[in-house]
Length: 165
Length: 353
Image 1 (cartoon, rainbow over the protein chains, first blue to last red):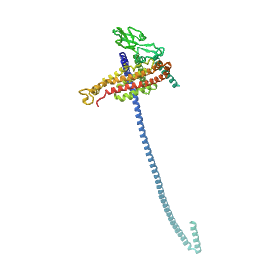
Image 2 (cartoon, rainbow over the protein chains, first blue to last red; image 1 turned 180 degrees about the vertical axis):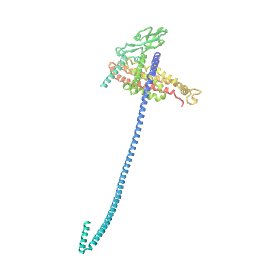
Image 3 (spheres, helix red, strand yellow; image 1 turned 45 degrees about the vertical axis):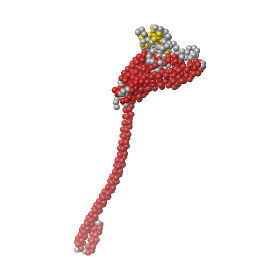
Image 4 (cartoon, rainbow over the protein chains, first blue to last red; image 1 turned 135 degrees about the vertical axis):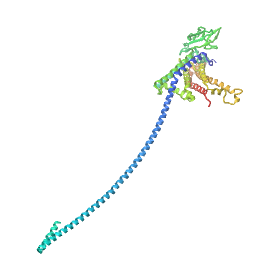
């Protein structure tokens, strides 16, 4: 039973040692260690949370970017389609306009040609009239003199008229 | 190469340990193989002593101060070296055999009686202080690490210490205690590290180890008493209500207060269980190793020296196994004491739901 009987002296020393150790550690060491470990645990937790948050943020940003790119692609296609349409339109319009313009020019040319023809015919008529008048005048004048001479005169004026024209 | 060196060191340490035990066992044997006084040897080694054994010597002791209040009412302070050889100094000597075996006694009227008070700074007392210093060094080492390196995780030995602190505080005390963990954490961590260090120091056979500290009931008594005091002095009203007027049918508490009596007993049985558990576990570990070592000498006495020599191999293997097991038990028992203290304290802090 000797082993089961606590020795008073040893109880006393153990009490002093344990209380001393407890007060020293509780005052100077444990609170600091506990605080540091808690802080580190916090830091790690926060780090993990932050990383997760960053990941979700990145994911949403990526999704948004993809969406934007897809939208842009669609817009680009639309724009290209519109441009092609417009180009065709412009070409068609130009063709049509050109055709109209050409027709107008041709008509105008036709008109001026006709005008010129009319004028020249009129002038010819006038000149022919004048020449006939001159011839008639000269015939009238020489007729008085002789027939032969008259004939020759008429011939001469006629040739004159021919060379003139 | 490192592994080889480590293995060699381990081998030498183990050999020293085994040699120490074997040498201790040989102590009372003398020249010829004769039956060792098994009980004597075991109890001497499990118990306390007034000087600290020196390796490889049967008589030399590291002297420690003896402080006694004699039966005549006067205090005496002298070195244990004056009496460990069996001498009598100022009327005091160490009893051999009898009721006060290996204790300091005074001869009064021809009878050996214990002095009134014995505050001798014995081997165990000295071992307790050495362990306390070791705990201080370890814990302040960890603190210094945090101060210097901030929140960077420590490496090497301090990493192990931090792992243990985190396991005990972060994974055990915190989940049980919750918001009160920072308040009681220092006490519980001190208890854990102190017990663990004392357990492990007890397994080292030579100075500054070798004292069977936690296998001494005085040591576990103080530890359990502290937990008992904290539990009951910080207990809430609800805790006392649960003890004095528990939620059971009225017939069980009135007129015969059966349940309150059981609950009141529970207040005391819990810390006593704490005390006995740690004490018995550590003491039995030491005892088994001693018995294995003594087998060598029992066999050589029963048969012949060759038989004893043959037993040595087996004894060493078994002792080695036991020492390794005790190392594991050292951790487990320190942890068990801590977690149970945590539970008891937190159970005394319940509030009515």
